[in-house]
Length: 416
Image (cartoon, rainbow, N blue to C red; front, side, top):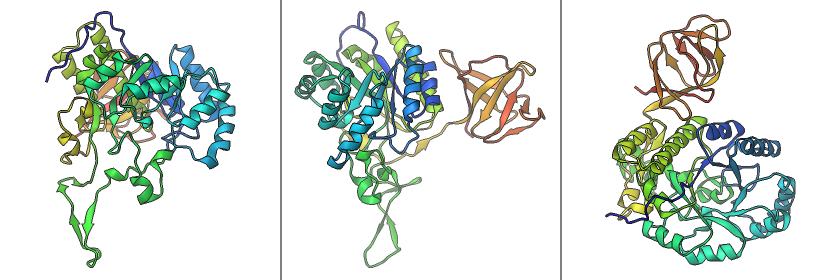
């Protein structure tokens, strides 16, 4: 099926909104081209089990981003119970002097408190609010919202209609994990583990392996539906709308969002690099089949589940329900990050994340550049400058004679 959308000429390229779970990842996101970053504090966000930002960290992150011309949005999108209201008020009073560019919320009560305690702060409505139509958006606008993140369940034709019939900013997810629940409101984790997904403590129970046990034959397990990698019940693929990004831009959305506040600097850097490049191609009217194929190939270098275009462009949900080949794809290993440059050996000092060896080909990702490939010929341990053939996790090594590279470089090795 073909889709009609307005000409890209004169259409503004949307904001690229990227996740970060700590100050280090925030810096990588900005280096690789994020227009805005969304982060979580120590309370009331849906990734509460992640590292997140302390109160001091929030201030440092916002100041750093603003110095780079990048916006920061705070996630405050968990479900709030009555006995938590006093704690929430205290938390809002602690953060009210931090100059966030927006606060992401799903709870009506939280909106009222934010309007009271932080009246000048823009309110963004979370995907948890399950917004699927223009009537809902108009309601949220009257409630003080400046932006809404649409439910992942909407179709493209609905996106087009919604944008025509609304006046506030529209944000959509284009990449990352999908929940097998409606707009992320899931109770499976809470019932199985006591960890409430709606409080930010999801155990990802839907992605575990499962077997069937007959009541009177304990410890006799039968597969529910099994492939060579195991048995699953939901286990969604990862959302990837890269190939359709020109359609989404053409629709006139204000922001495209990448999921992943539990992810490393490797994932955030690569996805930001790819979507930034795609937006540049779209702006130049060069986002053709060849460019899409190239960028998909680069996107494939980070750990992910097989991709799906989700609900927006699928004719039916069969792909979302298919359990075959939904384990993680790991074609490349993230092996290290840049620490500094060694003039003596004309190469970078790397903090090692995963093992790599002399003779292997390093794939080096750098902001705003094409990836650089280097055969590793000589490597030294940083502490004593002794030559080594193998770098192990937590080592610091010098890669000799490859010249200067960007301080935010990411180092990868093709998996065997």
